[in-house]
Image 1 (cartoon, rainbow, N blue to C red):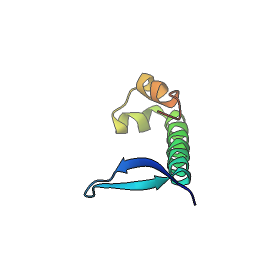
Image 2: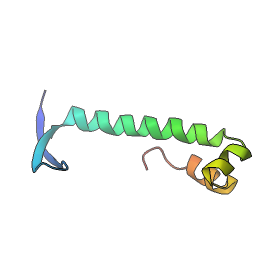
Image 3: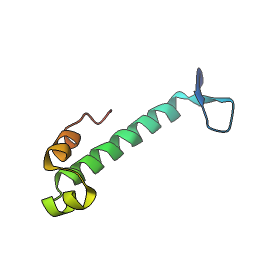
Length: 69
């Protein structure tokens, strides 16, 4: 696997080299998690949203954000 010169701070460690494949994998995993949790949020009924302490408008705003954010 090719290692590029990008470095990432790791809590408790100095710095380590991160492969391009690992960076892509991490970003795709985060995007997928965002997609699925936002989809679940959009499908919640008012009672469930109230239990979470979020309004329908807040849920709608969050559910429609880009998966990359």
